[in-house]
Image (cartoon, rainbow, N blue to C red; front, side, top):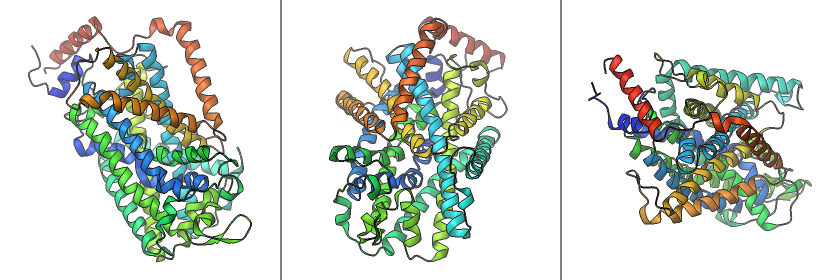
Length: 526
């Protein structure tokens, strides 16, 4: 007996050869909220603020944020069109496999998975740094000298590692055992992030020493000692300009979370593309106003040589401590500063919580087709909790391990952006090729129509430029990691995985799975 109560979402999923195992718990707002929470403008916008300020100064924020956000919107639109056709968890993997090949999809999945793990790692490291340098130092007034890591196995390193492990365990417990709470926290994270950003922005503008908007359009070169050695000294203007992009693209990334939760979203073919695009748009808009307020609020001070200089120069000289120095300098009431700092720390925790949700769904989707070691375990969904428990804990463990390198924040944050955008580039490029060849015939409700190829081309070029900027010194270790991954993947693939790995179901395999799903539903009385 056929299942006559099947929703349109389930029909689409069954047509791709997959059963509805996860719960359709998310509406339009929830799908938007998970990407908005992972983007989290008070995470990357704050923790990587020195990346831009110590490269090109005020112009690296006032101009580059707009350009970088426009690029992210183009990528979100290109991916949204694909998601509308194939709304599945682990979207990057499926799209790359369908438009490319199973090997191409397998490689894209690994890049995406590493990027997602780096999201959780970098944000949770950011939670530690913000908790230490803002909450403990400025709210509690505690001496945190012992909390500063001086290298692997130092006292500060142990404190940092234990703290990150503790909050990651908490996030994994919430994700695994409390699905409803996860949804509530993800929903509320949007309001908390927005409120914190608005209050922080208002405070910066109200107590700014002046509103010199020309600061936002002046580029300088603050690499080397002038920028607290965040970046090595450089002389090429275009190189300095490229470095500044890493601030906005590290912040506005991870919006593929809307796609990874497709199988938990109602009316996914319409709402998933909207979720991605809206999350990028609102992050651009409110994030831009927020980071510009930081530049306007920078007070005059001393540069690296001890001379009195303008606010941008003084702020850049603080290096990685630029935002912490700024918020301490702004003469707002202490109770307001404390509330803002608490909001920032909580927002970052919720950002990583949502990141772990996205990572686990990617792992689950990839594992159910046998793409990961231990796939049989990682693809299991608890029938009572409706959560992929093993994938949640595996993602949590791997994210903690990635933070054990003492000076990891710049590598993790850059790697996060580079690996995610590399994984975005792959299905977009493959979809363009299929569209040119006339092989993409089942476009969903979100259809770019005549603009499709132009949007795709802009997305591919933009991703390539970002990847190039993201592997320049001192984060060349990301480049070595990419090369290392490619070598290992080629060895593993041609050593035999290409024969055993089947990839997403196609042709007769879809029919076989559909028959198995129908038989299982009949046995359960559906």
